[in-house]
Image (cartoon, rainbow, N blue to C red; front, side):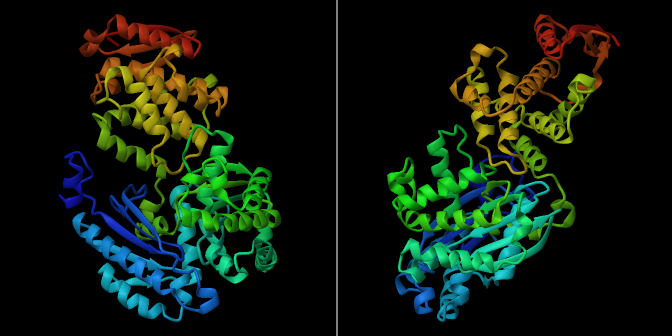
Length: 511
């Protein structure tokens, strides 16, 4: 067992995984992320950044500023020690635009590799764009659109479709670079940005498709938008703003010039606030020319793209949502095999034509089944509420916010059957999804509640039972060896489930 697994203290961990660390030396920040392992849905177990501003003066002086270099070296020294404490044997380090372009970049690399204790790979603009694209592939299913990764020194634009990178270009539009080249004058940056974007010949291909926004500056912009709109789910991954609203809000932030004056702005780090107006301006001008269908924010970027590139092809093809849920169930649920049985058992329930599902709805139902028992250790009075909060804010990939809310509500209803039990957060989340999503969540939750009355959370029982439709009845057939599990609570829960699907419940023993 690795040192990391010992620190996390559970024999039920994915102990066959070797932790992997990625040091990302960007133009604005230097960050270490340690992942549990190189898997399809990687879980960060440590994440720390230092806003060093390496790229602050590269455009005007051609060099990395001495004070920024010293901050970065101190950060890398700390990161080396952290990796050692966590038992990270596989530590990778990458550097982007600032180090790539600075005349003293080679000297920084010499010192940086000594401090970090590993080789630092300097990414070309092309490779940086490729890794950003792979990050989108890691976090989304069948991504189709233009991705933009905004750093301190550059903006990478990538055309993604059918899981492949089609076109890519690096533009000198990072926030720190724009501050440097314009003398911190936003009005001077407009022409610089417009001319650079106009030089992307294939950009028109993104019209009417999604735009995936990557990078810390744009995530900070999304946080401000969430605060301004009182959005109840504070999760960056998959957060969507319609194009017109994104343009208007970016313009608001840009004109404000002092993000700390906006709601939630004071919580953003000072070094990030400095570049935020320029990042908002880049997004505004880009969207005006691109005219995408919507803006989707991603927390998956070049670090996750690096992990994705290490995976074998068969692992890359796995569904990121189902992969995460299976791993999470193996860590938190009583039996991951029982969770898989719930997927099959509820397949029978949704065989009714009135409950016909899309392929995505089916995978979401299976994901809900896999997550349905992760709150079993909580106090019974709070399992619903705690499960809802845990799943709503989990590090899920491969799912939009509506799907995330469905999962949270389905597991909430697995523990709480009464509408009166709904607490404030669940009511606010319900307001974000359709009545169909809410109804499906209730049905799946009621089905899992019923199944647990039969299985007591153990594998090998519900696979022996059958759910069948007979006219206006939903029939549960229980074989003779489990007939003793019949009882008042089981019948009450089954009747509630049958009512939700518009049927009368009937239990048949000895089938």
